[in-house]
Image 1 (cartoon, rainbow, N blue to C red):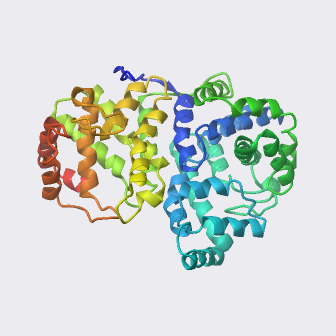
Image 2: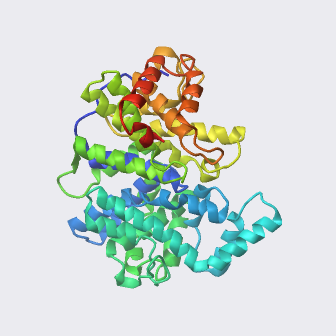
Image 3: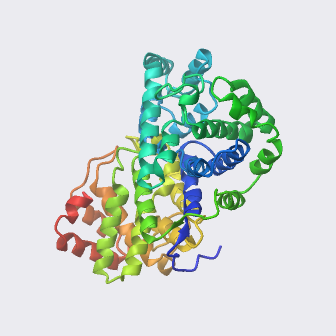
Length: 460
């Protein structure tokens, strides 16, 4: 397959283009297939139209649908800690369980509590989950919803969209979380989105009729009966969206943005979005806190030593902040594992680079940035991943990013080892000179660590 040709990213992009692309990363960390948020958005927009919602509410609903899971990484480590299972599978299965039914909830706990452990180990974990009960569920939901609402506000999308994300797990009968809101206490656009995301999950996995049956069954309990009634006749659109590619879904979602004027993102807004999503990625594991930010700072310092101009530095900064976006696809059972990974677990870990590129290339004009950002695990001798690039095939941006990424990884604590001292880190990296790491970037790293006061502490 030919390698992408370098092009300059545009100074201005559609906000809907960026968020619809980044929503794929949120789908994957929630255990859903890519396109879940886009289909949920399309369902929401159709229901909003049928219900005659005013323009401002539909705009809030639109952006809330794309970013509804933006807080999901904040409780991933806790979900893994409580259930001892792949957090993505646990979260994905959670969407299909009626928590108001005690027996179904108990069966879910038994199915996802420490699979592969001894009978005693599983029984102990189920007992722990039973003791936590609704308090535990509310805590996990609150972490996710509050963090998601905070991020939506940081992105400048307003209190309306933030309130939707905060109250997404509330139910019409008052038995939802985290606040137990009931009926019309729940904002109307939240009621629409709560139904839309559940309908999407069942329709995609079990078929359109099965999804609509769930809506009818849960109307008056989970869902506002009025919103549920608006789903009549949705079979055709649901069937069409169900079979669409991610590209086609994205085009429909961009065209579906309410109002005559699409929101645009300039350079500063793009940088802010990159910063926020770096924080989303780093929040997934306690061992990766601020890794993306530290790696970016170090990479920019290296590039300064190499004499890069402002345009290249800005590109590097965005690539650095987003280089691990694909790690949202990696379960915490791997990210937080205190012992060596198995061959199959390493394969899952390596795929994060593939997903970084796959997600970012959906932003029009960012195809080369997606490729360069995802290539930070390529090696000069061709033994890296995921493309096996060699020598000059590895972009200069990727070479600098690789040096910064490895330095930060070695100099910070991991579940399987303590943080290494700077001398140890540089000695290990020196062994990889020319075979894996770019010698010019490696020399610039050493100078940067010595020349910039406080850089070592920021990276450690």
